[in-house]
Length: 504
Image 1 (cartoon, one colour):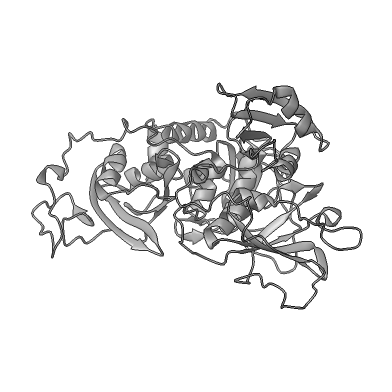
Image 2 (spheres, rainbow, N blue to C red):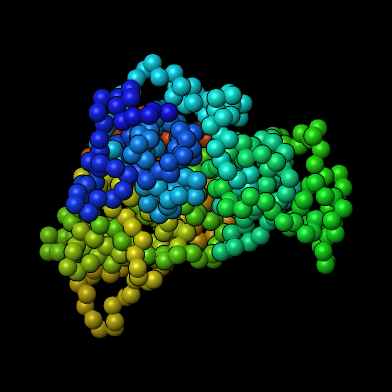
């Protein structure tokens, strides 16, 4: 832990003189960087707890803490991981020891810390080992002990399959003695409180499991510390369990606990044999899932309307100032079904976009905010509007509002569709499907270069009905996806295009 701002680094400052917001000094927002500046940390915050903020989004490669200023700098492995982290924490306030902290891009592109600082490197390596399921060293054990509560609050996102109390016990018992579990549903989400015998075990479980899937591509764990330090369990049934007191009654109309489920120190029940169990999501997908992605139809959350700004006006409107007919597809359609779009009359670089529900809006925002489209970095935020109103009958709004309610481009009409399992952040690699048998690699390369981009790599799947195609940049991939998703390949076959998590 650095004890002074200059320990191991040459005078770093991001325009803030201390951990509090200064009214006299307004800091301009820095451009995206893989180095993040974290402010208002509690005095007792450890390096491990700061690193834990970044772990769900990818590898953390360096850290510098400025203890006297309640600040830290965190270097992520990639700029994409840092962008995803900032986008996620712009909608969900990050906490360290139940204290809200502030995260922004740093003006620095990398952290040049003292290479001889072996403690910091040891902590980074040990935390990476914990994330991979290894055992922490004694140094990190000490840092992990800073967690004050042995109780974790667990939310299950993207819940395709039922998650039971016994499933949670099997997963979390890998990290220590699980004493008690209480499950409940809140805001249409399955949640649980789980108590370990030791706060260190709770911290280890949080570091290793937060943002991971229980089953392949679904049932994502979102984990925080609870403010409670002890759970009071009255009944042993399928909703609550005290493994230290198997004699507790089941309660009215509830199935009783199997005595064999009482905690045993020799217990070694894990979910390792379930196909795909505990596979980590890609960093951005983990963030999106944690941001509230629920793939079950009909579950409305917050407003389903987005405000997209800093759009390229030449693309969103004709020279006359009117949108081109028909309007181009929207990248938001990759993350949900766009219902209506309204280009703002007095600000034509901005548009209101209505998704099917609040979860889809959150997902689109977490993936698209900060991405580059048609040469401009777009901003995507949740709107205060609940719906996008259509113009009244007889009123000409110059074609600024379009209704996509019956669009053939919708990917998520069918509840539980496989498309929900193939949602990934924007990437240079695209996944193509529904390719006709007579279409060759050269045909597809030509099609995807017509828009002005360049195809860097191509790979057919074995049956030639699907392929991976890599553009030179993420921006080119976004543009070609908008242009070519649902492209008529002849007959009744329409090409399907989505972002891929793979590379060629």
